[in-house]
Structures are given as structure tokens and as C-alpha cells.
Image 1 (tube, rainbow, N blue to C red):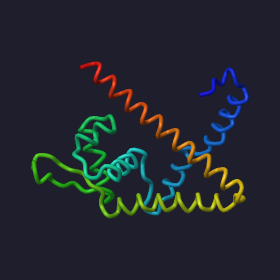
Image 2 (image 1 turned 180 degrees about the vertical axis):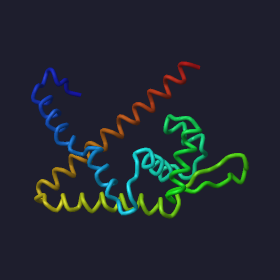
Image 3 (image 1 turned 135 degrees about the horizontal axis):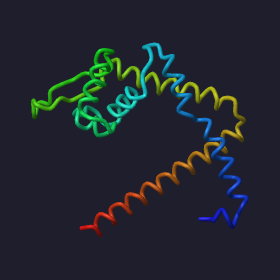
Length: 167
């Protein structure tokens, strides 16, 4: 890796890249969600929807842990989401004491709609780029993804090594 202090041009490039990437803000996503046909979706509800979309049905305890809130707060959150038909509660067939939360059809449609809307907007933006700029963006995006994967693999390896040395 090149030290940015030894290479000020690289530091400037990184700063400019950060400025360019910073336009992808959560505020833009929130504007989209506020005007969603199904009505407003709060950040907490969106967080739960994305969690369930990624992980599948989860017990209330796991949702509480993921959100960093109490189970009582999670119950209220899930109650409101259930009233809006975004999620459903189901008893775990293996342990009837455990309440599992799953996406409803409406919740799945909302997640799919957000993904479609995002993809359509990106396609529109990409359509404005020249072939040369599009190729450069693709090359840079792939490099960024690969760097992220290397970092994640390194942190997983480092975390595993730390766990092994602690035992």
C-alpha cells in the first residue's frame, strides 16, 4: 500500500473519490422511502425489513439484538409493522414459546420495489455516461468491491486469530 503522506497526489485522489462517493447518502434513500406508494417507512422498519430479507425468519430476540433495543421495544416495532402488513408472526414449530417474525407478501413487495426503483434510477444515471466513462466506472467499482472483500477476509482472519490466541 502507498502511504498518502509520501504520495500527496494519492491523498488528493482519495479525497476526491470520497467526495464523489458521498453523494450516495442515506437522505436520498429516505426521500425515496417517504414517497413510497405504500406510505412512509421508518428507518427502524426498513432496518427490520432488510434484516428479514437477508436472514429470513428470525425470533424476536434476534431482531432485538440486531437493532440494539430491548425485546419490549422490538415487540412494539413488530406490532406496528404487523398492523401495516409488512411482517407476520409465527410460532416456531420446534419450540412454541418462540415467536418468529417473517416478511409478509407486502413486506417482500416493498423490498423488491425498493430494489427495482434503485436499479431503475441507477440505470437512468448510467445511461447518461459515455462508453469510456461507463467502462472506467465499472473498472473502479470492481476494484472497490475486491478491496472490500480483501479487507473483510483479513478482518475475519484477524478475528479468528484473536479468538484462537484468547483460548
